[in-house]
Image 1: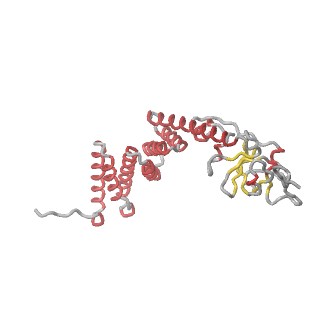
Image 2 (image 1 turned 90 degrees about the horizontal axis):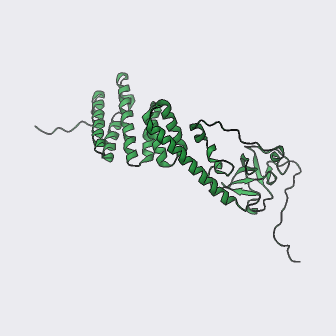
Image 3 (image 1 turned 60 degrees about the vertical axis):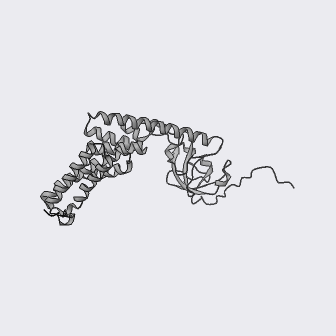
Amino acid sequence: KEFEPAKDLYSMSQEEKLQFASARKDAGSALFRQKRWQMAMKSYSQAVQTVSHLEGFSEPLRAKAQLLSNQAELNKAACALHLQEWKLARVSCDLVLKDQPGNAKALFRRGSAALGLGDFAAAAADMKKCLEVDPTSAEAKRSLREALESQKREDSKSKGVFAKMCQGLGDLRAEPVEGAPVEDCEAESAEATPAVAAAENLQLPLPPMPEAAEMISLDGQTIEPGKWVRTEGLVARVDLNGLEGEVVDWDAAERRWKVALTTEQRICAKPKNLVVLPPAPGFVPPRVKFGPATPQ
């Protein structure tokens, strides 16, 4: 009997595509059981590709094609986790969750990928959702605990680094890493991390508000988040005087305003070192001199 080449994807009928995709998924599962993760992932990818154009399926078969695609994507994510391909695993889970937001396996595997990426807040959120769907999942409980503990360690480390960077700066407190989240400031504790609080159902008090005098700028205007300001009169970092930026938040522990400068630097400054723009009419910025007097 002469060899007959296999049909290409475009010449297959809808039923043949479903059969081929199912066969590729089964082949992937056989490879998965043999711990041949890379080859298994390739088979699952072929299954997904075969049914990727759902609009090409008639209404009765479209749901079957979508289900088959979701199953193959979930299995791809499992392979990717074994291979430590965290981003690939997260992408596969995102595709499943777009169609099935309450899929416990997709939530757990996306949370596991977030753990691998060091995104502990996202991992905790996914594990919590997974437990809402499947409260008996021991793996999800264990992973949630790991995410919370890891987040607390990260917050504690960031707090310590920032405290050291801020020593000796006088009127100015600069954040340790350009572009680092303002939440890493010393004012906030690890226990106050939003994801940790949500996952542990903590009832956190509102952060202390600035006193009336601390809301008044150097030119006598009100300072609040969202206001555009200019730095003036800084002693420790005179090179930052005259720069503009947006007020982000109030740092209750430092008693300073967090400001994101246009230079992409982030600082914490006292109210007396900020001028709200445009300045109040008649305001003249101070001119501070430093160092020994100039010899006559």
